[in-house]
Length: 469
Ligand code: URP
Ligand code: ZN
Ligand code: ZN
Image (cartoon, rainbow, N blue to C red; front, side, top):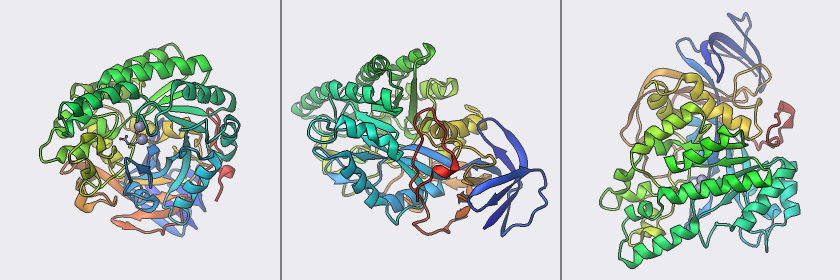
């Protein structure tokens, strides 16, 4: 199968030029001006952008959490991703307490079998080094292409680990070439504040935010940075929300430490005003770390501009409002934490980042595709448009007008964090390794087309031959 994409404006993290792209089988084999080649399929991209397929480094599909299971499984979550121009993501395997890492991997792989619409890799969320996985087994995971370890410093009594587990995992990472990821909030302090709020009869969704203050995020972020530096491990702080957490990351990076941070789309747009909405609507905005006051929006735009933060993910962790979020109708601490996002990351960041002049188109591609691919061992197979790279390509119509609404989305959830937002610019055709996935409003390819990708170790490149079917 060959595809010729004609006359598009190719935008990568570094370049911006008009050319044709020739794809043979799964790979980009030629880029040039007015290519004189025939192909099985020709796509006219004049007036359109051609972007690399986006990479989302932070998602939770089919994940048991908060007394329920996320509503999007691999098929629906990846379908939503495909319509949003994301062709590869890295999902979290959560090690169940008492389980080996091997059993956890087998369980997560079985959730994906036959359902994959886009390519995917896995991080390992370490929860138990006492009765479950061993340090030796943890050290072997990069051999299977699982080259990042995630630790939750919050969710006491569920996913949270103590500093010993955090530090031991960092020590393993310093030897195996894995990247350590942290959910940085002080879970002990939050636990105290939650109990105090409930004792005082404060049960509304807004108390989710009020019991998880920015200081709890700032403290944990700084602790993780110092411990990773001590252990000699590279660190990636997920879903950074506020100035208290941006500051220690910026300082560490200024010092030349191996520290990176991401934020997520929702933290630029949602705020305390949303979680305070009446009639339990605020529960739609219950995710962790929580929404912050609006003054943090500009902090985050500055951080992604200055590279204090280097990636924007979705942290897609979708629940139904009606039936799942309502588990916490009388007690905010029982509202499952998480929100949807896979379908609208590009829409929102293009509209309010690139079109609004806050970031360049190149920087947009870098934040949504290239940096995630580089940091998580997928580059240059993913995250750029280049000869030899996978033909994961998004033909993006910069003039298409769209009103974001749950009524038209592909996620199974019943709401959208950006309901009613009008944007200009949307993916028109999305290719995964040369296969047309999405064309207009239609999912063209069938589930099963996506593959597991064994990722390279931190700082190493992934070449096309590393794929595992
Ligand atoms: O609320 C969130 N973010 N849910 C997903 C789990 C996590 O903390 O990333
Ligand atoms: Zn988290
Ligand atoms: Zn998450």
